Image (cartoon, rainbow over all chains, first blue to last red; front, side):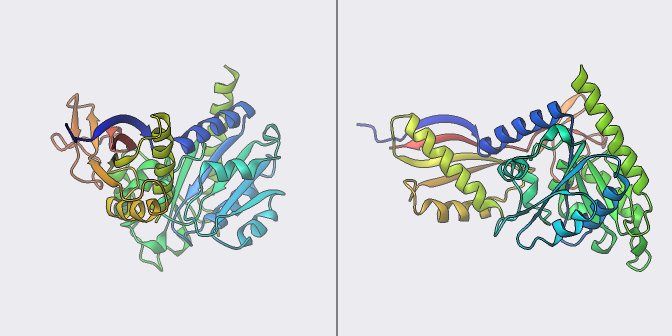
Length: 226
Length: 114
């Protein structure tokens, strides 16, 4: 009698549940006409400051924000000064957001009442790359104090993002940051990537980001109308 | 490290499949992990061993096939396998490449059952 094991072919995505949920979130966001952008970066690269500045420019829009952290509600408290629709997702020990956390966090919100939803992921350049959150745009942030080679060290997150934002440009000289090399490294791991160079402190470059996001929302609504 | 979360999702899926096939005893799980999946092989092996310990999959083997990045080069009109994650360029003609055909996989391909 043969004792060789029986093989069952499967072909299932390991994160199937997350992917299915993310797809359904994406559809409901699109149907409601809300432009959803997520932000990923290392801890401390300025996601919250960037978002605070952006919200101050987006006062004419109805904006919601979800902020992920392992602990504390500090970021939500900061953002609440700019928009009332803020929810903190505290993940406990989990190093990334997933679609289920996003779904739970937006529960009770009327998505039709939002123009934009920003999702600030947990500060981490590795783990968030595997999880689709249903966003239509993923922004990866890199601050000038982190060094030009970050994209080469974390190619996956840069490759899965749609745009890159170089932050804290006001500190570039002090950090001896080489902008040309940084951009070249980004282009190396993600050819053709749109890059914004900003300072949330001085406002430099933030207008370009705001215009880009307005364009994205307009495109989304054109598609929704069709 | 998010490989523990990945391992837990994987165990759920494997157990569901085992149930679907009449409650078979799974002795090995075959998975494909792409170089751009964001998952590290060693960390996944470690996490799977730890996470399966208290499950019906205890003692089962995890067989990981690593999938390199395969891109389509529009200039060569051909698929090319990349050696490096840092250089998204065609290894033949050096043109930048955007179209990633393989390398994002994170999937269960087969189960060995007793």
